[in-house]
Length: 68
Image (tube, rainbow, N blue to C red):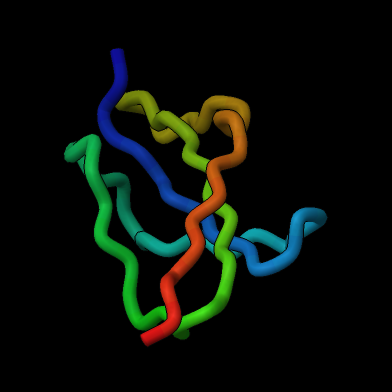
């Protein structure tokens, strides 16, 4: 059973990825900040069970922050 999720962010395709939340979140949406306009960010997520064991990384998702 999934207890929550960890969200990871990188600025380069090869990483390194930084864990954004210190404890698992239950929501399936996540708002990241602060971000810089014109930059591309890459995200991956892991699922965490009640014992704290993390799954493998999800597929990588790319987010491009528009320039003003």
